[in-house]
Length: 242
Image 1 (tube, rainbow, N blue to C red):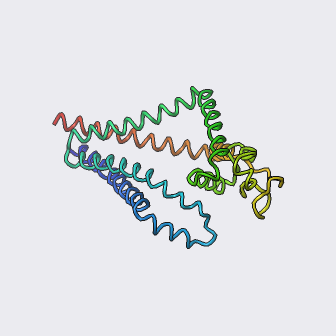
Image 2 (image 1 turned 30 degrees about the vertical axis):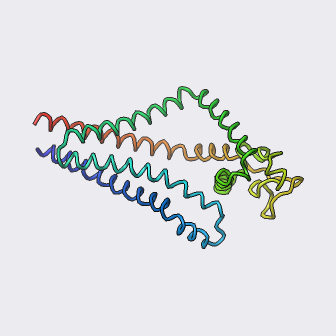
Image 3 (image 1 turned 180 degrees about the vertical axis):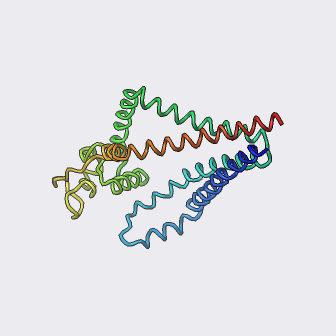
């Protein structure tokens, strides 16, 4: 019984943290979507805040989905452990296992099918450049997303500033300010642009520079998922045999 009690306590403790984290993330996501007016007012009061910060509203959907998933996992783990419910423990085990298998499959695809991934990235690059040429400056969502990305990463376009060349925005306004030299007004059509890296290259550099941290976090998450599966299945089997 002591071993069962220890398993129950560990599952309840860690899944309680997951449940509370999920509730907090879900609450923030709902607040972002429901009370967007007050958030916009707050952003407008921040000195020198770029108007593209309003695009954080789109993060609300991601927060709601992530928070809901964490709530389900935490609830099944806590209640399954405390009530010794085989059904809840089994559902908890299946959900965590599916997440773990999806992560393993993604890692295998990246390692084994690297050429395929590279070709998909090239195709995505063509789509991104086409989006810049046709939608940038016309579609507020696309424009805000690109402006936020370029401002945050200090980059220009997907590949470089030439992605904007001869686009509808470039023909009317010149290159975006993020692609220009210095901190002056937006570039004109004939103004030289700074050698600003493309956003794709900047993202690759960030991943390469932080690869050790990313691998460490991924391995830590995988270890926790394996421990959760072992603990839940061990408790499931002990309850079943009791």
